[in-house]
Length: 486
Image (tube, rainbow, N blue to C red; front, side, top):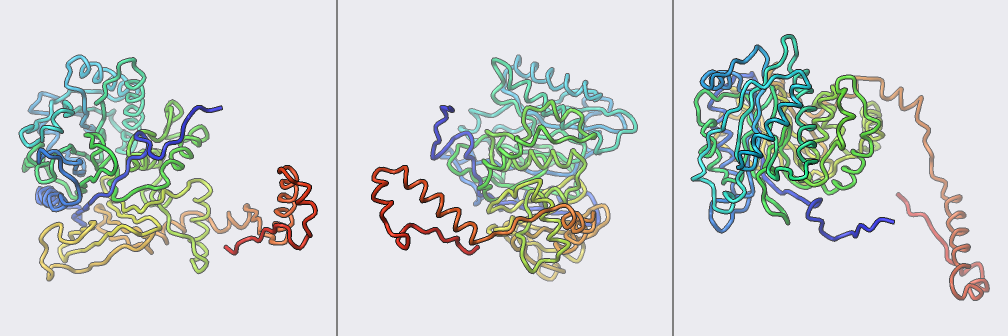
């Protein structure tokens, strides 16, 4: 018998967020420093979404995610004397500010990258400005390093991403399995598609803390920012958002069940694209925030070859209705057999480096408003006014409803409405035919349920003290069970 005691609040499992986010994108794929600066400006206007410590500088955590800034990184690597190949990746890593722990952590990550045929060409200490960090956040501030990784010739971006995913996760598990693990070790980002900068600073100071973000050479056509509000928990550097693919406003109230089901299915998940998946001890973390667990599973789906639309529809589907398009309903019912919804209230913005999207869960209790300008600037945020855009510049505006998803593809310039995404997904396979031919539906029989319930209650009553008295109760007065109408 388990000795585990259920607590009303578990400090390891019950991390919740009620935050603010914004997503900006040049729909035509134009990369600019203006978008980076405007995303930082949007972040500063979300300051009210988070809390601040008594020192006036330590916040709940904030961050920014950009497209992989290849030109900037090549110039920085050249300044550091690193030789990058045609295909390369980069990432930020948190370590405890202890030379021995830093070197050990670097060695572990380098080893796993090498086993994935990836070559670490160098480490760079990331420029930071601790003066803008509050005293409380300084006590837990990690040493922040940037790693540069070369990939073999001929590898495609998503091939590289899968190997980075496996190496990063296995390195983290090895570090955690040590007798004296580095408590601050955390790979913020390791990718050739995106780049993330985050920390426990006030939103208005993130660009000052990371001078790289103010560098005019830093450009992107997609920017996601997030201001965290930590509910019932103390802020941590690694819990700041965005994570590797998403930023989340709200709570995943079904997170404990979602984690358990995800890890329970780990043994039956296989993909030829992820041969090292079975080496992972678990698919999603059980001690991080609810948002980080959702991000863990999302990256498993994407690494396994799933596209962003399908992955997010698996995680946060709309509610199934009787009047729904039969083809779409079949698609959603098929998905429901493989993955339970991660129910909020939740608003999520995501990007894979080319497509940027926003989802609301089926409860729809988190605001998400969007606008598109005449010159193709797409904005979606938890509130309006995240950057100064004159009304006459707006071509289209709207908001997301429960279970809806919108997206922009910066490679094609297409704006994907919710209906277009659903039409695309339901036509991918013959879901309705599969469901019709292979699913056996068990319908309710109220009379049989009533008889079975009454029989169970009669037999149970005989085991109770004074059962002889209950035997004398007339049949018309015995307990009756009546099924509720659903």
